[in-house]
Length: 105
Image 1 (cartoon, rainbow, N blue to C red):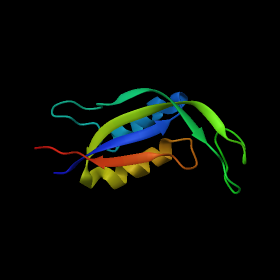
Image 2 (cartoon, rainbow, N blue to C red; image 1 turned 180 degrees about the vertical axis):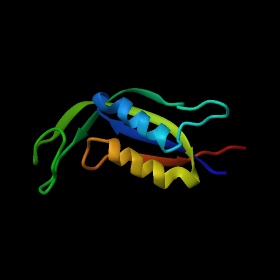
Image 3 (cartoon, rainbow, N blue to C red; image 1 turned 30 degrees about the vertical axis):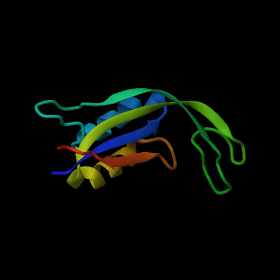
């Protein structure tokens, strides 16, 4: 089974919602443990372009703000369901959700 690392940028106010969505979709299993997630504060910038409907900020103005980086793992076969669950729980119009393959010797 190919395992993937999941990285998500999310406002702190929605960390628990995103963690709940990850867990419900089957992410965060490590051996006999479930809901394995790390998160920490980060700073981000974004520029909403014309046509955007930003959660925070206004179109045409560069925004800077505090976010959290949430990381977990899932199997490759779970990735589509995890992506859909996180998008449904995430407040951003275009959330940053990365899936990175893990090397496991």
